[in-house]
Amino acid sequence: MFTRKTALILPLMVALSAASSALADTDTSALCTEAEERYVEMFGAPSADADGVVVVKMYKYNFCPAELTVPVGTTVRWANVDKRTSHSVKVPGAPESDRAFPEEVIEFTFLTEGDQDYLCGPHWETQKMIGMITVVAE
Image 1 (cartoon, helix red, strand yellow):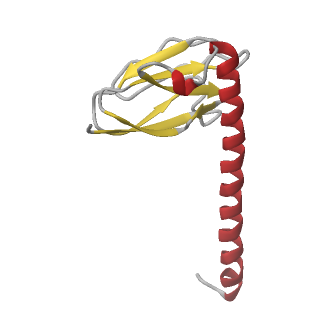
Image 2 (cartoon, one colour; image 1 turned 135 degrees about the vertical axis):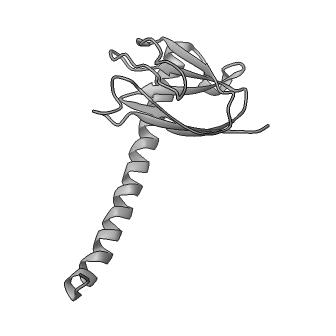
């Protein structure tokens, strides 16, 4: 039932939701900047310099970046840049990877077009550690 009270509260809820989303984006951006700094410390070069692969950092129960678009045939390398936690990667249609401990990597080559959610086996439910890769034709 839509009442006058609802009419007054609804805009406030929308504004709070937008502010929360903007804050989350800022927090994620800062977190991913930290993850890149850790990557450089561990691997000696920026992730953008990785030869022939696209790098996703696993850091503080997040994938950085959490969403990306790649052409068919791209290999994605997930690098664990955490200090103590291990992570895995579960891609649709493939078994879950072994755990990657700090400074270890997991790789997967995407051969099928479409949106593909992936997750960290041990942390997707409790920490919402889920990512999305959109695979497009070249």
